[in-house]
Image 1 (cartoon, rainbow, N blue to C red):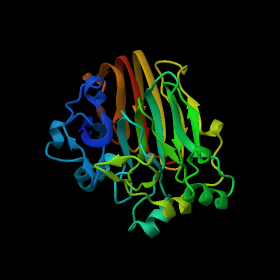
Image 2 (spheres, rainbow, N blue to C red):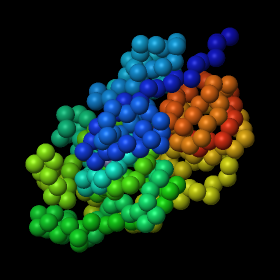
Image 3 (spheres, protein in one colour):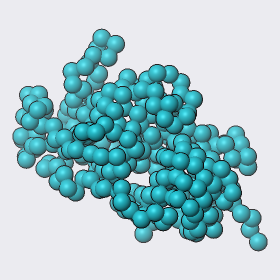
Length: 317
Ligand code: ZN
């Protein structure tokens, strides 16, 4: 008989950013390191941010070291790095307009790094919020012309968003988070970003570096349609896992719990981030801001309470 595996609790890593704010402290109750905290890396095993593990059985480990030593907890998946990175982002100001390469481009031009597919779940945003997703160029020549000649008003495409929307950002998609948005990001475990445009802002008296030629290389032309970029998730049934998206790198699920749910954890691992409310998971208290991993072979799960949880795992189908 094998013993019940423990829930792996991750301690987030915080990042100060020029565009960050204080809501990760005021809304999520984290002890943030300063007044411009832009990112909470909740489930992270990256060289630039590696979550320490709170769970007694794994005290002293980080998610990276657990991935190295205890691959059985993650279904003996192959791969050099833990495949996903889960962040909560507080944008007090607009982020620069950027694009990520795909795996092939990153491997060739970024020292073997992974590319980056990412997905945003909008936790909160202003009434009339818009995000930058995609662009308006129809050919690569037009794209290069718009970027080289700074025709930003023509180039940038903005799409309206609401709380509870899900936006998938494929590699090659021009994107930017805008001021006032609080969101949960599920992404490939990579940190390669090409900055296309930074609104000509000065940071410490200087313009931030742009990556114009790399951007023109990797931007997908034409951009995916607005309709294909966005999913409303507000009215999904309660007390069940609703799959929001399945792409090559991840599957994302949402649970709006008001009562209880019982299910089996049969994925190689299951990331859980509580973004609202509180309750229990197999008797342990869980609350807004908690980031957990249910390991491989975890088996029966019972969750109770009133909370919203976003979950993710790899796509092993
Ligand atoms: Zn991005």
